[in-house]
Image (cartoon, rainbow, N blue to C red; front, side):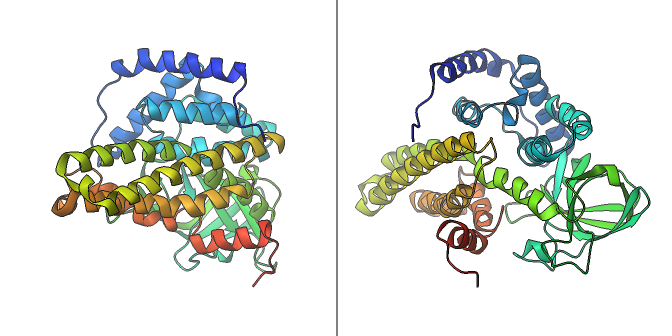
Length: 376
């Protein structure tokens, strides 16, 4: 498989680099991590800047390789992260682009691209654990509306979101994977209650969401009724396949910073530290190549990432944790100081073997869908 870029793709890279060099110095300072309204405004402002420059639609109206170049170059240049736009741009938007009707694409995609609306993800539930398909949030059909009751947890950016990509059970009698539907729920609908959750790192980007007879139009269903599990697999393929691409680039940058710190404070003299840093360098180089392979495979399959994303997610989540474990070793006692670089990142990295599908789920996917092993 050819992993090289075409002349047209390299020309896109050059134009993007030039634009980033001109644009980034003029951006205002980022708000405090705890100021979510401020962060929402900042993140949407950056998205509007991308839109005005013609780069906003790269997440779903461009080839996977062009998308990869965009994520690589923006991260290398230190451009703002998508932040509050994460779910809309990298999960819900691509899903609607792939599975939505023409009317749904026209309604929801332009506001995401223009930086006007924020989405959150309502998938996980308190009693479902890693078994997402065992969700209990119910949606009862009442004419042209669904009446939704239940609760969600780890709902990303719920407190500043306009819409929620919501999984509900629309047929309790069907096998658990076949009675699910994918809805777009307005977060200002009567009956929606949001309770922010504070993580180990002190941030509140997640929340519990309680739904008490919330009415959602049937027209907001993406895909057919009870076909939501298949639509969800499309969402998760984007979440595992391309959503972490920028973070791989960021981790390679952090690895270089850790190596420089080790040289400065004497930890470089420890051969064990040098071996771990060298191995991590090889790991991230391999993950980048795997990303390129997955993107090339997506080109052939019509733009939706395949199960190779699970291989990537499984290894990346562990390697990221190993990166910050090495950072703690290099920092020594400084690893207990929350004000030092990498300390909060180390705490947040603990969640990566759970987020976007636990490592146990990823191993099942790899075993069953790639290796052909029997279920159970």
